[in-house]
Image 1 (cartoon, helix red, strand yellow):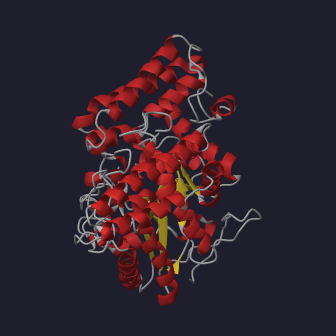
Image 2: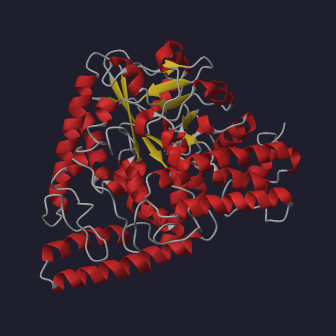
Image 3: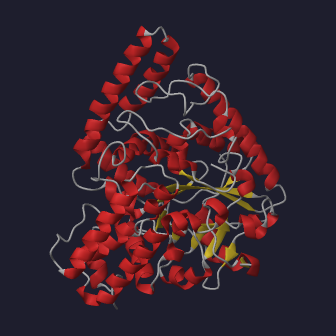
Amino acid sequence: MSASGTRPAQALFSSTTASATSTDRLRPRRGIDMPDDPAGRPGRTDRACDVSRPGALAIVLHTHLPYVEGFDTWPFGEEWLWEAASATYRPLLDLLERHSHGPAVTVSVTPVLADQLAARGVAPRFDRFLNSTRELVYGAEIDDLRRQGLPGEAAALEVLRRRYRETCRPSGAAIRDLARDLVRVATWTSSATHAILPLVATPEGLRAQLGVGVDGHRRRAGDWAGGLWLPECAYSPGLDDALAEAGVRTTCVDLTDRLGRGSRDHLQPYRTTAGTVLLPLDRSLMDLVWSDGAMPAGAPYLDSHHLTRYRLRAWSNDGRPWCPRRARERARSDASVFVRAVRERVATGGLATVAFDTEFLGHAWAEGLWWLESVLDEAVAQGLQITHADLAGGPESRARASALPDAAATTTTWGRGHDLSTWNGPRVAALANETVRLERAVVDAGPRATPRAWRELLAAQSSDWAFLRTFATAGDYPDRRFADHAAALRSELAAPGTLPSELRGLAPHIEEAMSAGRVGPR
């Protein structure tokens, strides 16, 4: 990640093989617990988030993958989903289970990711990934390294192969359990397909992205406390009324350029004119972990550039064979440094909010979940309060939140330049303009726009196609995907009902939302 804010988790969506995903090198409990509902998941709470002394930390994990289920496998496609499920999501759930009575981590899951994990037919394909692809590639590579007289590297791959063998078995049941369990711990949702909301052109389109996203989460989780991840932290004051209408109580924003990096103004929640609480991300803390030269570049961690024949990672950043014991020790040390930095940052009060792509902590930084678990342990040991971000959205906390300063009431993102250029800049201007035309065509069609047309629009509006094209990390995959959704949408508008209503697992309940007036004309 650069200092300008490029998401390193994008490494998961870069050049892959059937055996591994290449990643970019990243240079290197006592809190307020959420009450449990009878189902055991974090429940709604109205307790205030006290940002006076002593200070507190909120950790928000944003869990998202592009809409790839059923659309190609290698080098770009649904293998990203299987890799994330096995290397990140299941280990994260195990970690949260171990710390279920400790500091509360705030987890968001995008509806499009939940749709993919719960789609019909994913179980046998995930099973083939674990039992065929991973076993064959790791086995061949381990044998090859031993023949080359590299026992340390072979031992490193044995440890990593064991991770897959211990993940999600039996896989058929486990992928269904994974979809259920992720939603069970995720109190935050997002827009339906991770659309950049300030770029959505019409009130109807914005209502559909928010309505389908919130409705899908409620159907899966049974409850929602109002937490919503703004895709790419893209915020504009023009969203305020739509967010409030959708029931959004709490979200994260990146105001680094508006309030000044390191300013204490980042350590307090703000309130929009419509009542939604905005939690500013604290870049001075996040950059310790998620920037060029940050913690993941530490010598003992897996090197993302020095790869084996089948593009597996067997070496540490210092060139030695990767040693899990050494990496774990460094993760504990880095966690201690991070917690001390947070304690100093909030020593005189305030709420520091940090957010990371979940996939970054499990894939781009292979040891990232070890680090996160050590942070939770260190927080207890050092007396740092970790609080759930939902607490900042309770009535008392909202009443204490300050109005958003005029200087910060502009369009911002956590992307490069903290603006929208990644998604509407010169490289993707044609795509951005076509997305607007598609949206207007669906809205103008009124009641003639079928559920399939709306599903194709939601798919086309995903931020991922512009992101992948801007950073040129997935060949022509984003161009083909966007073009296919656009063509299908126009075909369906020209002859409504020609295509099947369903689009794989995407937005499975949109028909009900349309009947209720949450999607389409009112």
